[in-house]
Image 1 (cartoon, helix red, strand yellow):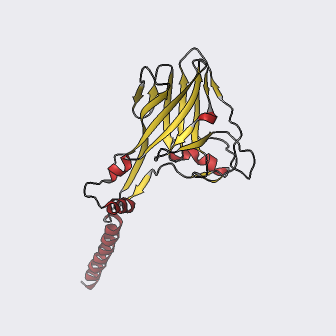
Image 2: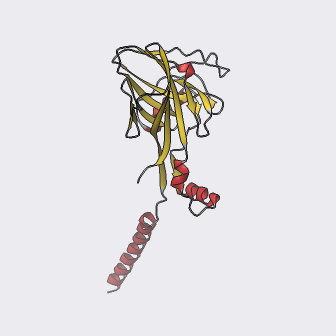
Length: 239
C-alpha cells in the first residue's frame, strides 16, 4: 500500500510540473505584430495624361503605351516596366527622384551603379536604360543621399526574392540604406504611438495610412520626355 501511495504521489507531482510547464508555454499570450505594406494608389504625369490609365491591385499601372508592376520593399522600390509601343522607351535615371512622406525629393540610384570613388557620395552619371519595343526591364529604385545612406560601397548584384531579402545582397557589399518605411511594428510600439497622440479618435491605422511615398520616373518615348509620378500609400496588413 505504501508503494502504491508513493507512486500516486509521484505521478501527481509529475502531472503538476507538466501542467505548470505547459501553462507557461501555451498560456502566455503572444504579443501582436502589426505588419505594413506600401501599395500603389495613383499615378500622375507631366505632360498630363489624356487618359488616366489604370492602377490594379495596388501593384500595377497600365496606361496603354507602358505598364509598370511594382513590388516595394522597406529600402527601395522594385519594379518591372513594359514597353508596349513600337518605339524605344528610355529611362532617364539622372532625372528620376524619390519623394518622401514630407514631399521632399531625393536623388536615386538603381542596381549595378558604382560611385565615383570609395570616399564620396558622388555618383557617376547614370547611363539611360533603353527598353526595346515589346520588351520589358526589371530594376529597383533606391534613395541615394545623406538622409538614407549609412555606409556605402559599390552596388553589386540584386536578389529577385521577395520581402526584405530583395535588398540584402547590397548589404553584403557594404551598402546600408535606412528603410523608407517600417514594415513591422510591435504591440509596445503601437501603444506608445497611440498614447503619445492623446486623441480618442486617433488609431494606429490612421497613423499608418497618413504615410505616402513617391517615385518620379523620367522616360523618353517618341522623342518626348514624360515624368510619371507613382504615389504609394502605407497600409496595415490583415492578420
